[in-house]
Image 1 (cartoon, rainbow over the protein chains, first blue to last red):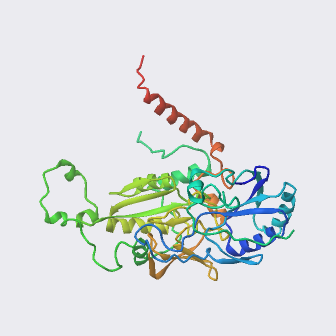
Image 2: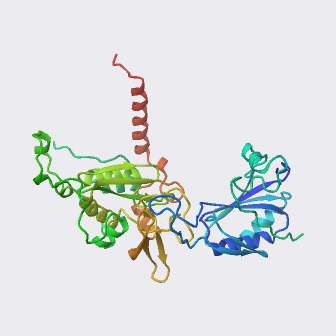
Image 3: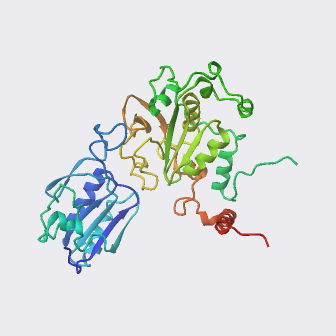
Length: 156
Length: 255
Protein backbone atom coordinates (compact mmCIF):
# COMPACT_ATOMS: atom_id res chain seq x y z
CA UNK A 1 0.00 0.00 0.00
CA UNK A 2 1.21 3.47 -0.81
CA UNK A 3 2.14 5.59 2.18
CA UNK A 4 -0.19 8.55 2.15
CA UNK A 5 2.70 10.81 3.09
CA UNK A 6 4.39 10.35 -0.28
CA UNK A 7 3.33 13.09 -2.68
CA UNK A 8 2.21 12.22 -6.21
CA UNK A 9 2.19 14.18 -9.42
CA UNK A 10 1.60 13.63 -13.12
CA UNK A 11 3.18 14.97 -16.27
CA UNK A 12 0.52 15.77 -18.88
CA UNK A 13 1.56 16.66 -22.42
CA UNK A 14 -0.33 18.48 -25.16
CA UNK A 15 0.22 15.58 -27.57
CA UNK A 16 0.47 11.79 -27.18
CA UNK A 17 4.17 10.97 -27.23
CA UNK A 18 6.13 9.07 -29.86
CA UNK A 19 8.30 6.27 -28.43
CA UNK A 20 11.45 8.28 -29.18
CA UNK A 21 10.16 11.27 -27.22
CA UNK A 22 9.00 9.00 -24.40
CA UNK A 23 12.48 7.49 -24.22
CA UNK A 24 14.11 10.93 -24.14
CA UNK A 25 11.66 12.20 -21.51
CA UNK A 26 12.00 9.16 -19.26
CA UNK A 27 15.78 9.30 -19.39
CA UNK A 28 15.58 12.91 -18.24
CA UNK A 29 13.03 12.02 -15.55
CA UNK A 30 14.93 9.05 -14.11
CA UNK A 31 18.00 11.23 -13.69
CA UNK A 32 16.06 13.19 -11.06
CA UNK A 33 16.64 11.72 -7.59
CA UNK A 34 13.62 11.08 -5.38
CA UNK A 35 11.17 9.23 -7.63
CA UNK A 36 9.71 6.15 -5.96
CA UNK A 37 7.32 4.78 -8.55
CA UNK A 38 6.14 5.69 -12.02
CA UNK A 39 3.24 4.63 -14.29
CA UNK A 40 3.01 5.30 -18.02
CA UNK A 41 -0.60 6.00 -18.91
CA UNK A 42 -2.31 6.18 -22.27
CA UNK A 43 -4.55 4.30 -24.67
CA UNK A 44 -3.51 0.67 -25.04
CA UNK A 45 -1.75 -0.71 -28.12
CA UNK A 46 -2.39 -4.47 -28.14
CA UNK A 47 -0.12 -6.81 -30.10
CA UNK A 48 -3.14 -8.50 -31.70
CA UNK A 49 -6.49 -7.11 -32.77
CA UNK A 50 -8.86 -7.72 -29.88
CA UNK A 51 -12.24 -7.05 -31.43
CA UNK A 52 -14.15 -7.18 -34.70
CA UNK A 53 -13.75 -9.19 -37.91
CA UNK A 54 -9.94 -8.87 -37.75
CA UNK A 55 -9.80 -10.32 -34.20
CA UNK A 56 -6.63 -12.32 -33.60
CA UNK A 57 -4.62 -10.78 -36.44
CA UNK A 58 -1.27 -9.16 -35.64
CA UNK A 59 -1.54 -5.45 -34.95
CA UNK A 60 1.68 -3.77 -36.05
CA UNK A 61 1.80 -0.25 -34.61
CA UNK A 62 4.64 2.23 -34.94
CA UNK A 63 3.96 3.59 -31.45
CA UNK A 64 4.51 0.22 -29.76
CA UNK A 65 8.26 -0.17 -29.45
CA UNK A 66 10.88 -1.28 -26.99
CA UNK A 67 12.66 1.71 -25.51
CA UNK A 68 15.76 1.96 -23.38
CA UNK A 69 15.34 3.80 -20.09
CA UNK A 70 18.20 4.04 -17.57
CA UNK A 71 19.75 0.60 -17.62
CA UNK A 72 16.59 -1.28 -18.60
CA UNK A 73 14.71 -2.27 -21.74
CA UNK A 74 11.06 -1.35 -21.56
CA UNK A 75 8.36 -2.53 -23.94
CA UNK A 76 5.69 0.11 -24.40
CA UNK A 77 2.16 -1.25 -24.22
CA UNK A 78 0.40 2.11 -24.43
CA UNK A 79 0.61 5.28 -26.47
CA UNK A 80 2.02 7.40 -23.67
CA UNK A 81 0.04 10.52 -22.83
CA UNK A 82 0.41 10.93 -19.07
CA UNK A 83 3.12 9.91 -16.63
CA UNK A 84 2.13 9.33 -13.02
CA UNK A 85 4.83 9.65 -10.41
CA UNK A 86 5.15 8.98 -6.71
CA UNK A 87 7.87 11.05 -5.11
CA UNK A 88 9.93 11.00 -1.94
CA UNK A 89 8.95 14.58 -1.18
CA UNK A 90 7.53 17.70 -2.82
CA UNK A 91 10.95 19.24 -3.38
CA UNK A 92 11.42 16.89 -6.33
CA UNK A 93 8.75 18.65 -8.41
CA UNK A 94 10.81 21.71 -9.47
CA UNK A 95 13.63 19.36 -10.52
CA UNK A 96 11.10 17.34 -12.56
CA UNK A 97 9.87 20.52 -14.21
CA UNK A 98 13.43 21.41 -15.17
CA UNK A 99 14.05 17.89 -16.50
CA UNK A 100 10.94 17.95 -18.72
CA UNK A 101 11.45 21.41 -20.18
CA UNK A 102 14.20 20.59 -22.73
CA UNK A 103 12.14 17.68 -24.12
CA UNK A 104 9.00 19.67 -24.93
CA UNK A 105 10.14 22.37 -27.29
CA UNK A 106 7.38 22.05 -29.90
CA UNK A 107 4.37 21.75 -27.62
CA UNK A 108 3.42 22.34 -24.02
CA UNK A 109 3.20 20.19 -20.92
CA UNK A 110 2.24 20.68 -17.31
CA UNK A 111 2.85 18.95 -14.01
CA UNK A 112 -0.09 18.50 -11.66
CA UNK A 113 0.23 17.61 -8.01
CA UNK A 114 -2.49 15.42 -6.59
CA UNK A 115 -3.37 11.80 -5.89
CA UNK A 116 -3.35 9.68 -9.02
CA UNK A 117 -2.41 6.17 -7.82
CA UNK A 118 -4.47 3.88 -5.62
CA UNK A 119 -3.59 4.37 -1.96
CA UNK A 120 -5.35 1.33 -0.46
CA UNK A 121 -5.63 -2.21 -1.78
CA UNK A 122 -9.07 -2.85 -3.26
CA UNK A 123 -11.01 -6.10 -2.96
CA UNK A 124 -9.60 -7.19 -6.33
CA UNK A 125 -6.06 -6.47 -5.11
CA UNK A 126 -6.77 -8.60 -2.05
CA UNK A 127 -8.10 -11.46 -4.20
CA UNK A 128 -5.06 -11.27 -6.47
CA UNK A 129 -2.23 -10.59 -4.04
CA UNK A 130 -3.65 -11.80 -0.68
CA UNK A 131 -3.15 -10.12 2.69
CA UNK A 132 0.65 -9.88 2.34
CA UNK A 133 0.72 -8.01 -0.93
CA UNK A 134 3.89 -6.42 -2.24
CA UNK A 135 3.14 -2.81 -1.34
CA UNK A 136 5.09 -1.42 -4.25
CA UNK A 137 2.73 -3.13 -6.71
CA UNK A 138 -0.55 -1.71 -5.38
CA UNK A 139 -1.86 0.97 -7.70
CA UNK A 140 0.76 0.38 -10.38
CA UNK A 141 -1.15 -1.95 -12.67
CA UNK A 142 -4.43 -3.73 -13.09
CA UNK A 143 -4.47 -6.71 -10.68
CA UNK A 144 -5.31 -9.06 -13.56
CA UNK A 145 -2.17 -8.01 -15.44
CA UNK A 146 0.53 -10.67 -15.68
CA UNK A 147 3.33 -8.21 -16.40
CA UNK A 148 5.79 -7.23 -13.72
CA UNK A 149 7.14 -3.74 -13.08
CA UNK A 150 10.45 -2.62 -14.51
CA UNK A 151 12.89 -1.75 -11.76
CA UNK A 152 15.30 1.05 -12.52
CA UNK A 153 18.33 1.43 -10.30
CA UNK A 154 18.12 4.44 -8.04
CA UNK A 155 20.66 7.20 -8.26
CA UNK A 156 20.75 8.34 -4.66
CA UNK B 1 -43.20 33.82 -49.61
CA UNK B 2 -41.37 30.57 -50.36
CA UNK B 3 -39.96 28.74 -47.38
CA UNK B 4 -36.21 29.14 -47.03
CA UNK B 5 -34.59 26.61 -44.72
CA UNK B 6 -32.23 28.03 -42.11
CA UNK B 7 -30.43 24.72 -41.35
CA UNK B 8 -29.15 25.90 -37.98
CA UNK B 9 -28.64 28.83 -35.62
CA UNK B 10 -25.45 30.66 -34.76
CA UNK B 11 -23.36 33.66 -35.76
CA UNK B 12 -19.87 32.17 -35.64
CA UNK B 13 -17.80 30.70 -38.47
CA UNK B 14 -18.52 27.23 -37.04
CA UNK B 15 -22.28 27.78 -37.36
CA UNK B 16 -21.82 29.10 -40.89
CA UNK B 17 -19.77 26.02 -41.81
CA UNK B 18 -22.47 23.77 -40.40
CA UNK B 19 -25.12 25.49 -42.49
CA UNK B 20 -22.99 25.30 -45.63
CA UNK B 21 -22.41 21.57 -45.20
CA UNK B 22 -26.09 20.89 -44.61
CA UNK B 23 -27.34 23.00 -47.49
CA UNK B 24 -27.69 20.63 -50.48
CA UNK B 25 -27.48 23.58 -52.90
CA UNK B 26 -23.97 24.37 -51.61
CA UNK B 27 -21.37 22.45 -53.58
CA UNK B 28 -18.86 20.85 -51.24
CA UNK B 29 -15.24 21.67 -52.01
CA UNK B 30 -13.42 18.70 -53.53
CA UNK B 31 -10.04 18.17 -51.88
CA UNK B 32 -8.85 14.76 -53.05
CA UNK B 33 -9.54 12.15 -55.64
CA UNK B 34 -9.87 8.71 -54.09
CA UNK B 35 -10.99 6.29 -56.79
CA UNK B 36 -14.08 4.06 -56.72
CA UNK B 37 -11.83 1.03 -56.34
CA UNK B 38 -10.04 2.53 -53.35
CA UNK B 39 -13.30 3.43 -51.63
CA UNK B 40 -14.46 -0.19 -52.07
CA UNK B 41 -11.12 -1.43 -50.70
CA UNK B 42 -11.27 0.74 -47.57
CA UNK B 43 -14.84 -0.26 -46.80
CA UNK B 44 -14.01 -3.95 -47.24
CA UNK B 45 -17.53 -5.17 -48.03
CA UNK B 46 -16.72 -6.73 -51.41
CA UNK B 47 -13.73 -7.24 -53.69
CA UNK B 48 -13.32 -4.36 -56.16
CA UNK B 49 -14.80 -5.30 -59.53
CA UNK B 50 -16.90 -8.17 -58.18
CA UNK B 51 -20.67 -8.23 -58.67
CA UNK B 52 -22.92 -6.73 -56.03
CA UNK B 53 -24.37 -9.54 -53.91
CA UNK B 54 -28.11 -9.10 -53.55
CA UNK B 55 -30.54 -9.39 -50.66
CA UNK B 56 -33.62 -9.80 -52.87
CA UNK B 57 -34.48 -9.95 -56.59
CA UNK B 58 -34.54 -6.64 -58.49
CA UNK B 59 -37.75 -4.70 -57.93
CA UNK B 60 -38.66 -5.01 -61.64
CA UNK B 61 -38.68 -8.80 -61.32
CA UNK B 62 -40.74 -9.13 -58.20
CA UNK B 63 -44.44 -8.64 -57.58
CA UNK B 64 -44.95 -5.54 -55.49
CA UNK B 65 -48.09 -5.02 -53.45
CA UNK B 66 -50.35 -2.16 -54.45
CA UNK B 67 -49.06 0.66 -52.26
CA UNK B 68 -49.51 4.41 -52.77
CA UNK B 69 -46.20 5.18 -51.05
CA UNK B 70 -44.29 2.91 -53.44
CA UNK B 71 -45.84 4.84 -56.29
CA UNK B 72 -44.75 8.14 -54.78
CA UNK B 73 -41.16 7.23 -53.89
CA UNK B 74 -38.66 6.45 -56.61
CA UNK B 75 -36.35 3.68 -55.41
CA UNK B 76 -32.61 4.37 -55.36
CA UNK B 77 -30.36 2.41 -57.74
CA UNK B 78 -29.32 0.07 -54.95
CA UNK B 79 -32.89 -0.61 -53.89
CA UNK B 80 -33.92 -1.19 -57.51
CA UNK B 81 -31.21 -3.80 -57.93
CA UNK B 82 -31.89 -5.46 -54.57
CA UNK B 83 -28.43 -4.75 -53.07
CA UNK B 84 -27.43 -5.67 -49.56
CA UNK B 85 -27.41 -2.95 -46.90
CA UNK B 86 -23.84 -2.04 -45.96
CA UNK B 87 -22.19 0.71 -43.92
CA UNK B 88 -19.38 3.17 -43.58
CA UNK B 89 -18.44 4.63 -40.22
CA UNK B 90 -16.38 7.71 -39.45
CA UNK B 91 -14.58 8.90 -36.32
CA UNK B 92 -13.92 12.63 -36.14
CA UNK B 93 -11.34 14.15 -33.84
CA UNK B 94 -12.58 16.92 -31.57
CA UNK B 95 -9.45 18.87 -32.49
CA UNK B 96 -11.02 20.88 -35.30
CA UNK B 97 -12.05 18.00 -37.56
CA UNK B 98 -14.07 19.30 -40.52
CA UNK B 99 -17.18 17.33 -39.60
CA UNK B 100 -18.52 15.68 -36.47
CA UNK B 101 -21.02 12.91 -35.68
CA UNK B 102 -24.24 14.92 -35.24
CA UNK B 103 -23.36 17.17 -38.14
CA UNK B 104 -22.70 14.14 -40.37
CA UNK B 105 -26.18 12.76 -39.79
CA UNK B 106 -27.75 16.12 -40.61
CA UNK B 107 -25.57 16.54 -43.71
CA UNK B 108 -26.36 13.06 -45.01
CA UNK B 109 -30.07 13.41 -44.34
CA UNK B 110 -30.17 16.63 -46.35
CA UNK B 111 -27.96 15.44 -49.18
CA UNK B 112 -28.52 11.70 -49.68
CA UNK B 113 -31.52 9.43 -50.24
CA UNK B 114 -32.32 6.01 -48.81
CA UNK B 115 -29.92 6.18 -45.87
CA UNK B 116 -30.03 5.23 -42.20
CA UNK B 117 -27.54 7.39 -40.30
CA UNK B 118 -26.67 6.65 -36.69
CA UNK B 119 -24.92 9.12 -34.41
CA UNK B 120 -22.85 8.07 -31.44
CA UNK B 121 -20.68 10.20 -29.17
CA UNK B 122 -17.47 9.96 -31.15
CA UNK B 123 -18.42 8.18 -34.36
CA UNK B 124 -21.14 8.15 -36.93
CA UNK B 125 -22.36 5.30 -39.07
CA UNK B 126 -24.44 5.46 -42.23
CA UNK B 127 -26.13 2.43 -43.69
CA UNK B 128 -27.74 2.07 -47.10
CA UNK B 129 -27.80 -0.12 -50.21
CA UNK B 130 -24.31 -1.06 -51.30
CA UNK B 131 -24.05 0.75 -54.64
CA UNK B 132 -25.64 3.88 -53.18
CA UNK B 133 -23.22 3.67 -50.25
CA UNK B 134 -20.20 3.60 -52.54
CA UNK B 135 -21.40 6.74 -54.30
CA UNK B 136 -22.08 8.53 -51.01
CA UNK B 137 -18.87 7.30 -49.36
CA UNK B 138 -16.86 8.70 -52.25
CA UNK B 139 -18.41 12.11 -51.71
CA UNK B 140 -17.86 11.91 -47.95
CA UNK B 141 -14.17 11.06 -48.44
CA UNK B 142 -13.28 13.30 -51.36
CA UNK B 143 -14.79 16.55 -50.15
CA UNK B 144 -14.21 19.05 -47.36
CA UNK B 145 -16.09 16.78 -44.94
CA UNK B 146 -12.94 14.66 -44.58
CA UNK B 147 -9.45 15.36 -43.32
CA UNK B 148 -6.80 12.70 -43.77
CA UNK B 149 -5.37 13.06 -40.24
CA UNK B 150 -8.41 14.01 -38.16
CA UNK B 151 -11.11 11.85 -39.73
CA UNK B 152 -10.90 8.07 -39.54
CA UNK B 153 -12.83 5.45 -41.51
CA UNK B 154 -13.37 2.92 -38.75
CA UNK B 155 -15.88 0.12 -38.64
CA UNK B 156 -14.79 -1.03 -35.19
CA UNK B 157 -12.29 -0.07 -32.46
CA UNK B 158 -13.11 3.56 -33.12
CA UNK B 159 -11.55 5.18 -30.01
CA UNK B 160 -9.82 8.46 -30.86
CA UNK B 161 -12.41 11.25 -31.09
CA UNK B 162 -11.69 12.76 -27.69
CA UNK B 163 -8.02 11.84 -27.35
CA UNK B 164 -5.10 14.18 -27.77
CA UNK B 165 -3.47 14.03 -31.19
CA UNK B 166 -0.08 12.35 -31.56
CA UNK B 167 3.10 14.27 -32.29
CA UNK B 168 2.50 14.01 -36.05
CA UNK B 169 -0.92 15.61 -35.65
CA UNK B 170 -2.79 12.35 -36.31
CA UNK B 171 -5.80 11.12 -34.37
CA UNK B 172 -5.13 8.05 -32.20
CA UNK B 173 -6.06 4.72 -33.76
CA UNK B 174 -5.44 1.53 -31.82
CA UNK B 175 -5.35 -0.46 -35.07
CA UNK B 176 -3.33 2.17 -36.97
CA UNK B 177 -5.41 1.83 -40.12
CA UNK B 178 -3.85 4.94 -41.60
CA UNK B 179 -0.23 5.94 -41.40
CA UNK B 180 1.76 8.96 -42.44
CA UNK B 181 4.28 8.60 -45.21
CA UNK B 182 6.83 11.03 -43.77
CA UNK B 183 8.82 11.41 -47.01
CA UNK B 184 5.83 12.34 -49.13
CA UNK B 185 3.95 13.98 -46.25
CA UNK B 186 0.81 12.10 -47.27
CA UNK B 187 -1.45 9.73 -45.40
CA UNK B 188 -2.35 6.28 -46.61
CA UNK B 189 -4.71 3.56 -45.44
CA UNK B 190 -2.98 0.22 -44.88
CA UNK B 191 -6.00 -1.56 -43.37
CA UNK B 192 -9.68 -1.56 -44.25
CA UNK B 193 -12.23 -0.05 -41.89
CA UNK B 194 -12.38 -3.12 -39.64
CA UNK B 195 -8.60 -3.56 -39.41
CA UNK B 196 -7.93 -6.25 -42.04
CA UNK B 197 -4.65 -5.43 -43.85
CA UNK B 198 -5.12 -4.19 -47.41
CA UNK B 199 -3.31 -5.73 -50.39
CA UNK B 200 -2.78 -2.28 -51.86
CA UNK B 201 -2.37 0.98 -49.95
CA UNK B 202 -5.02 3.62 -50.38
CA UNK B 203 -3.64 7.15 -50.50
CA UNK B 204 -5.89 9.87 -49.12
CA UNK B 205 -3.50 12.78 -49.60
CA UNK B 206 -2.06 15.35 -47.24
CA UNK B 207 -3.56 16.44 -43.95
CA UNK B 208 -5.02 19.94 -44.02
CA UNK B 209 -3.05 22.61 -42.16
CA UNK B 210 -4.21 24.10 -38.85
CA UNK B 211 -5.37 27.37 -40.47
CA UNK B 212 -7.63 25.56 -42.97
CA UNK B 213 -9.01 23.31 -40.25
CA UNK B 214 -9.83 26.24 -37.99
CA UNK B 215 -11.64 27.96 -40.84
CA UNK B 216 -13.58 24.87 -41.96
CA UNK B 217 -14.32 22.97 -38.76
CA UNK B 218 -17.86 22.43 -37.51
CA UNK B 219 -16.74 21.61 -33.98
CA UNK B 220 -16.73 24.12 -31.15
CA UNK B 221 -13.55 23.95 -29.07
CA UNK B 222 -12.71 26.74 -26.66
CA UNK B 223 -8.97 26.07 -26.49
CA UNK B 224 -7.93 25.56 -30.09
CA UNK B 225 -10.82 27.05 -32.02
CA UNK B 226 -14.06 28.86 -31.34
CA UNK B 227 -15.73 28.31 -27.98
CA UNK B 228 -19.40 27.31 -27.89
CA UNK B 229 -20.05 30.12 -25.40
CA UNK B 230 -18.81 32.64 -27.95
CA UNK B 231 -22.01 32.04 -29.92
CA UNK B 232 -24.94 33.60 -27.99
CA UNK B 233 -27.49 32.73 -30.68
CA UNK B 234 -26.57 29.05 -30.53
CA UNK B 235 -26.76 29.14 -26.70
CA UNK B 236 -30.20 30.74 -26.89
CA UNK B 237 -31.40 28.06 -29.32
CA UNK B 238 -30.04 25.16 -27.25
CA UNK B 239 -31.45 26.66 -24.05
CA UNK B 240 -34.86 26.96 -25.70
CA UNK B 241 -34.82 23.35 -26.94
CA UNK B 242 -33.71 22.18 -23.50
CA UNK B 243 -36.44 24.17 -21.78
CA UNK B 244 -39.17 22.94 -24.12
CA UNK B 245 -38.09 19.33 -23.84
CA UNK B 246 -38.00 19.55 -20.04
CA UNK B 247 -41.43 21.17 -19.87
CA UNK B 248 -42.85 18.62 -22.27
CA UNK B 249 -41.75 15.93 -19.86
CA UNK B 250 -44.34 17.31 -17.42
CA UNK B 251 -47.07 17.39 -20.11
CA UNK B 252 -47.96 21.09 -19.69
CA UNK B 253 -51.50 22.20 -20.46
CA UNK B 254 -52.42 25.54 -21.93
CA UNK B 255 -54.30 27.66 -19.39
